[in-house]
Amino acid sequence: MEAIKVSGLRKSYGKLEVLKGVDLSVASGSIFALLGSNGAGKTTLVRILSTLLKPDSGKANVSGFDVVAQPEQVREAISLTGQFAAVDGILTGRENLIMVAKLRQVKNPGQVADDLLKRFSLVEAGNRRAATYSGGMRRRLDIAMSLVGEPRVIFLDEPTTGLDPEARIEVWNEIQGLANSGTTVLLTTQYLDEAEKLADRIAILHQGTIIVSGTLAELRNLLPPAKAELVERQPTLEEIFLAVIGNKEALV
Ligand SMILES: Nc1ncnc2c1ncn2[C@@H]1O[C@H](COP(=O)(O)OP(=O)(O)OP(=O)(O)O)[C@@H](O)[C@H]1O
Ligand SMILES: [Mg+2]
Image (cartoon, rainbow, N blue to C red):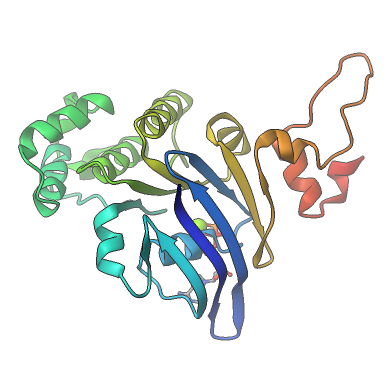
């Protein structure tokens, strides 16, 4: 079953054509990583899929609903952690979570909040105003907020940007746990090791279209086989990325 299906999606801002016919599909319960350079259009695509932005043409279907014709049903099925945090600094971490729980009409908002504070190591900070949080704590709270109400599809736009290594691993574990429990995750990232570690499938958005997509093993097959030198080494996703977007240095 496909949780996300996109075909021929196009979007321009004025004369700037950002998406020039994007096709992709994401299986239910899988983790899909969308890679691309700065300005490639990742956030634009995520905003279209989460109904914040209308495409110019093409089709996008999320959890069985059309993003243009059935935006309310899509919104009920998804949640989004945007590239920039949606946390309210005046409220405490716990109050932020309770506010989202009430908006999503979840039962026992206080309990849901406490559970998420624990999962994201924010118990001690929970009763402090979010304005006093470090960047990484804010980010973790932001992701925790997107898990309230157990949405079927979660969009995470650069979920671990700015996190320290330990916090990144914590977030990775949460993302993996979500997929294990059947949630579909589409994430964008600049960290290629993150995609290598987490994603069932990876796609690269470049100059308006998806230029390659597949499992890590399939992407590895795009490059010449690992050479037997002193040590045999598989190409990293970073090398594949640079090679397919046309960075010559990666090919030497
Ligand atoms: N509201 C807007 N009006 C005009 N141009 C925009 C708008 N939003 C985005 N763009 C442009 O569209 C292109 C794609 O932007 P987008 O934010 O989707 O890229 P991205 O892949 O998410 O980049 P990053 O990795 O830096 O987050 C960029 O050239 C950006 O300047
Ligand atoms: Mg972006």
